Image (tube, rainbow, N blue to C red):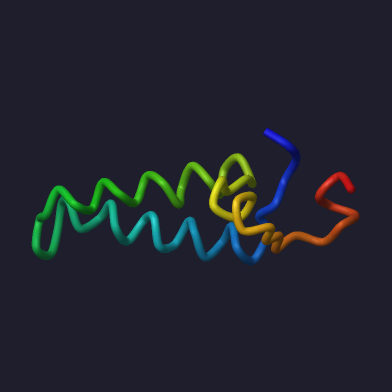
Length: 67
């Protein structure tokens, strides 16, 4: 892993989306597809997204990314 590439606001959005998707497993349509919410949660926790690296994207400021 080559440093952080997910910024603070991006992390918050990923946590919210991940939480909502996981909640779908227990409420609403009760679909197992909600477990896909683990992906945004994990990428938010580790502050690194493999797709961002592939596409050369970065949502965190250079000073906070270790650059």
